[in-house]
Image 1 (tube, one colour):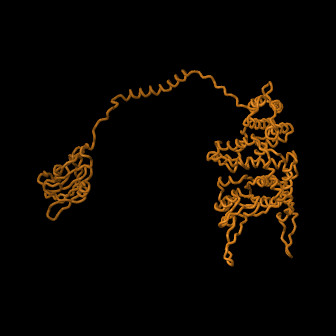
Image 2 (cartoon, one colour; image 1 turned 180 degrees about the horizontal axis):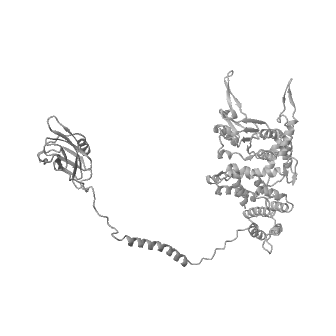
Image 3 (cartoon, chains in turn blue, yellow; image 1 turned 90 degrees about the vertical axis):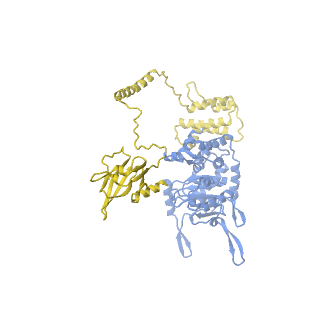
Length: 334
Length: 267
């Protein structure tokens, strides 16, 4: 097994591993650590899934997504979700031109390759639904016309797990639309030290006679080692990754066990099994394999399964967590 | 319709009229009547008790200008019927009340016609101890002592049950063994292959004493020089494309490390 300098490991030096390590290295010039999140974003990009990131503010979620987008030369937009946001603020609307007396379509920020929906749980359910529909159908309706969204189209939504006041929790049916939900951790001591030291090196950004201090966003590498067509090619390669019958059986078995576990009120949908297999394929590609192995679905199980299960009242009363139940299921899986 | 009439009779003072019911009341409920007496103050007969059909008392009186006394009497009927109130009255100064005009009053009942009219049912209880109290206590005491004796006797007569010997829980090695044996003899089904591979992970997880977290443990054991080589070989057999179906000998060789040795444990 080879270990690259940016933290993404690979079994061989194959094309997928090169793609992943190059993107990770490009991101690593801006963002310290977070290799697992970079891998999850790549998995989402390579499989056309969507990603929900959960983490406290200030751990470089936006910077990370923007850096990944820049590394593959993807169009990037960010929406800060708030309570007064309207569906038309996302998908766009028809605007009357008073001179011509005709309506013109104003496309919303959803028309992009990489959309960061920041704090998605702060918007009203109507707005959440509008975005989730766009995610599912990859097209939106404005006025009488339906518009295809650009390809690739990936939504990376974020949620703050601590400030729940005034938020609208996404229901299970809508959480299911997200292929992966990943929980971000604080950086390690060494990583945080590196973040601070990089901050010390930032200079001033001059505008005319004035200047403002540079931020980490200004430090994002402008050079894109890959283009959209490279991503498309990688996506095709992912589809060529072999998935054995044994592997499919393991994934389906895992999903089935979530439906019969006594601590769970709601188990995973068939969409979870599909997501598990597809994400494992992409992970195998990133790791330089042309076939998926159980390590892939075991590593991704938490991100694929946890947001799709709901503990019953008794388990919650006993202080059980979804992580505990999943660990139990994985330990008994055979 | 009777109730309003009775109520009205109870509340309105009436003058006695010849041969007419001057007042009526429901049995057990106080009725009132106003009598103009020119023979003195009236009061209830002192010998009346609960057995009497009618009880009466002087509630108040007023000396009138014409020398007569207006007596306000309250009565309670214990039995239904029409009664002459004179029968239960006496003059305070003595003398018969026969000189008064009849004072018919009616005691009515809200119960059904055929309902018993007695206020007190003097039916003795069906069974009484009648001196058998001591005997009853002795019987209860005997039964109380009998219960533990019966329980003790039941326990002594219970057939002896041999202690249940619990089967030891199947170990990972126990579960791997039949699959390894089957793999040497025939092609395993997809189900069996999947179980075998996951059991091999569990086997190495225990053998290398890795953490209980399965994903982390599998990632670590794939990096282990010995386990990683063997695990990757099994993964290639089960998951790699174009690896073809290995012969039973190849599979047997692959699974040789997991074959149960003579001493019973997995190698």
